[in-house]
Length: 248
Length: 106
Length: 154
Image 1 (cartoon, rainbow over the protein chains, first blue to last red):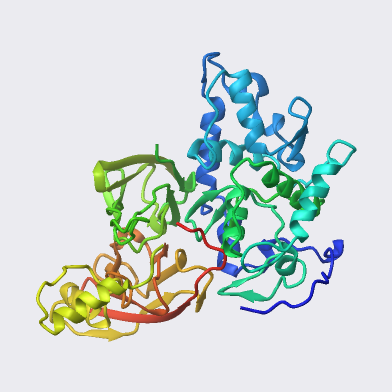
Image 2: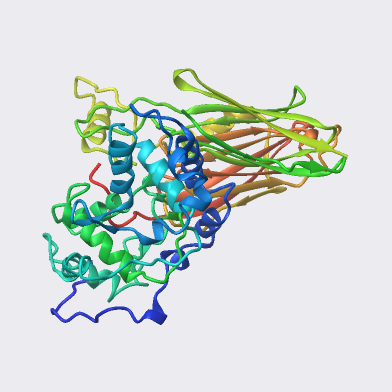
């Protein structure tokens, strides 16, 4: 384990040097992501498409009944999330937005985080933004949450007293255990992580990071989690969505 | 609810070797893992994939726990005649999924 | 995926070897190269296995041992008179040596199959091609398997 001394951070990666984790993967793993007929994440996208059309809840409505064909209706949506929710007065991530639709519009129960259905729907919606640049709105409403997420990214925490930035800003491209450290841009979420052998959300991956530095992982849906997601997506602004990504 | 992705060309010339790709969702629980409490998690895998072409078997894969979750296979068959390719996956706990793909052979 | 040999299992093996009373029957966390040879024998019987004609493609350094892409091919005209009947894949250090058996035949057109396998440790993978004339051919490939960083506490 590399001993990272000092409190000075190298700072944000220059825009021109930002690279997706895709570029740091092996040829074989990149091939797995590139081929829709071989990408295991596409199984979830397939299921999501079926769920999109299925009538559900007390209202007996399908997503498609309001939103129509997802290819048009959901194009660009995932690239804008997390987004400010005026009713809740805070940002929400895509999973939370989907659940708001389910509970309020479909009168259906919210789907549990990391449940097969929620992952499938999120993957299906995010897939409609594939190739589009991440575009997070920063305004007076979102700024405080963005600042909070940024502070978390640069804060040392956990038993290993590490800040996210120390690996992902300062040491990306170097190796940790058997893997190459990526810059940590959430371009491919929900992602098929080879370590999980399944699809998972950005929150699940962040919890893995926090466990990795021996810090208490935030709960799914916690405000701190969404703020960190918001910051990470903003940090990746302009980079293309790759969902469903494949990552080690 | 298992979903499967099959990739077979829609059409081919008679005698052409066509490449088939199959991907099915399944955890392929090895039977060697233990839970947090130390109890062994029972094996739950797909054991067999059989591909038939207009009823004749043309490919078979006998799987063991070392096949990764969401089993993926690429294999080939000779395009002999138009018809249907049938894929059947069977495994532990009565797992059984059948999918078909049509192929037109000129 | 659980890769460690638990101390309980190791000690149980040691205790049994010393004849020290109660033997706990546990499945070893990984098989041995000898068990792989036994598994290969069960397939080929007493026939000799010759190195050659089989090509086994695996990445020399796997990104993650849970998902290692594998392609195996056998030189063959794949005619009714002369074709590959089956391809068998084995490992020496996984919990069990068998990985997969592919049953082919002349309808395959070519003997070339790809899949994704799990490798519990850095080890050598062996592929055996079974031809229609009853002969067996083999190839091996070594793969380095490393642990991922930032795991789940599962």
